Length: 344
Image (cartoon, rainbow, N blue to C red):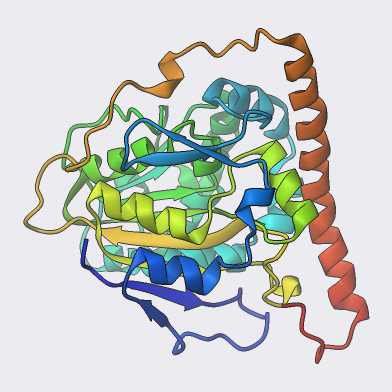
């Protein structure tokens, strides 16, 4: 695509100066990659590249703990009990949510009805943000594969009236051209094929509709990079842009977000580190121009090598714990060091 891409650097409210006016315009994927990712040292990481098509490449690691949606299902079988109280305070705050959803222009729903789908909405934290931004519950659909997460969402008073149902991000059971807005926060890291999920977002949107994807960003620090690759998918900023472009979106924008106590630090990666938006052109009614093959999830999910399975579980569990410690470390660092000290 020839459409230009905008990258906006910002931090959650209360985290110092917001740089809304300092958007960096990037003319190509090569520019984006060289500008932001030259320090990634990706050859030293566990990341390898595979994909269902030459265009729709995905990054994966043979040792990653969460490689399939079934593994994510088990992960949230237990995490759903404490998700809103343990995970969100360190990685996904209300201020971050407001920042991340702002580019989706959900406030338009105050003037005219918007049909919104929240894919991978889990316990409904992001869905609550959609309602607070102006969305009407009767026009909002929350989809997640975890019944345990959805059980929590159904109990929230703000979400009464929303349609809450189980579903697969890579195979949504809705007609083409159904929604005005597609939102997905903290879900892409569990998709076996992120490109397929983004192609699905394009399909279910009406012409002129907008997709908003919020997710992790890959670390540059060597230890954090190793831990991220051992746990789950942490895409680079360039990969998000590539996936959106390949799916057919235009007017693509990437907005950087993060907890205020990180002071803009991104070297350790962020579980919720960017918000990417793209528009389905008014003239682009129908499915994505990118056609993909068989769903990866249809392939065998069972790990036959017991040693490899044990290694994945041990490394992945250690990596998951590491990313619960990092926010605490950054919070203490912010508390103890002068405000004049930059963490970047």
